[in-house]
Structures are given as structure tokens and as C-alpha cells.
Image (cartoon, rainbow, N blue to C red; front, top):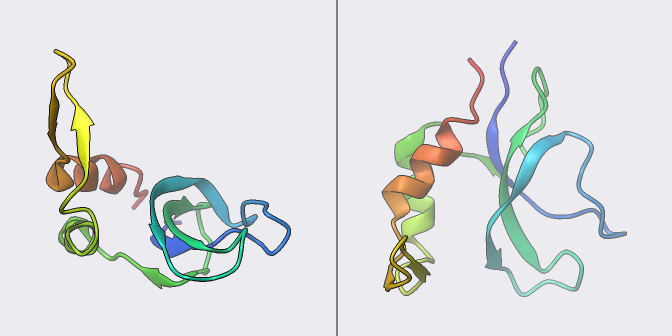
Length: 100
């Protein structure tokens, strides 16, 4: 079996959907009502057919999606310096959650 890397929202009661095994990554505001006002990225349970708001089918798709809204994000490096968010590194970490 395999899992998927998908975009999703929380359930209407604020809980994580049961088909998500590891999620909550890189929230994107979507203009919806709380608690469903953020689109999140996560890995589905192994064997799940769920695609949520859309499947991110490969690392390039994850990076492209992150590029669409994180271009102004920053993060701290190991030295404590503020640096540009590394979309490629983030995509690599997320794609590593994929089970083939």
C-alpha cells in the first residue's frame, strides 16, 4: 500500500481528519471560517484513498505549491540568523513522508 501527500483542512470541530497520519505543515490562509481557515499539508494513512483539497504527487509539486505562498517567509538558521525560507528543503522533508 501507499500513502499520499495532500492539502487538507481541519474538520468542522477543529480536529485533524482521521485519514491524516502526519500533518499540520506550512499553513496557508484560505479566507474560510475558523477552524477551517487554513489549508495544511500532510501525509495520509497508508492505503488511504483520500485526497483532501488535492494531492501533491511529487516533490516538485510540493515545492511549486510552497513557492506560491511562502516567498516572503523567513526562518532561523542554526546560528540564530534570520534567513529566507527554504522551499526545496521543506519539500524534501515532506516528500520523505511518502510511503511507496
